[in-house]
Amino acid sequence: MASIMSTLLQRAWWSFLIKGIIAVVLGLVALAWPGQLLGALVIILGIFLLVIGIVATVGALMHRSESKSWVWLMIPGVVAIVVGIIAIAASKTTTVVLAYLIGIWALVNGAFEIYNAFKLRKDIAGEWVPFLVGVVSIVLAVILFLAPRTAGETLVRLIGLFALAIGVLWLAIAYRTRRWHKPADKPVEP
Image (cartoon, rainbow, N blue to C red; front, top):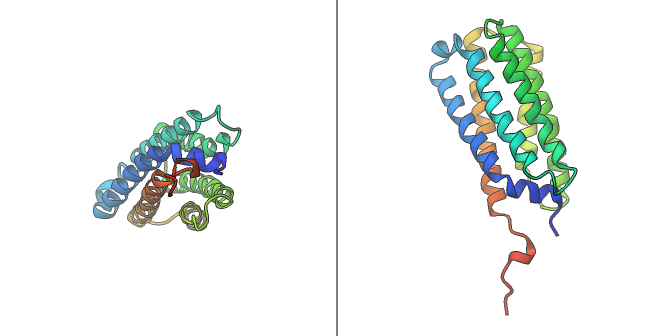
């Protein structure tokens, strides 16, 4: 029998698809044009975090009547919204402040992804993608906290690589959760 966590993830597969597409596009743009993106980086990342935060929060809220576990899916979304709003409102901020803001979101997102992955593993053997998303997020947070003064274009490339990696992983989660079936839904073989 599927847990509430796996059921929530299965029903919210579309939120991972949207977040994945947005992250992949941002990652490719950041890697292709790091110099041009540098000037608008704060606003673009603020919008990125705001959109994925809204998608994650809406996905969690849609399933709040099913379990108390929906809160664990919503917290990273709310943090992304707050960090996105701060980044947009303070668009003249320095790259150091930007690095810390992104680092805070990446740390919170990574911790909750890993937590959710362990809860999910109780029901779905071999489900490693959410854990990988968490690890990639935490690695980015550590790099940003240790080297917040990273040169502008290097920061853009680092964020581009992160966005591309996490976007691909979110797309993998969307694909995998879309395919999950409850045992009761499987046809009975004679």
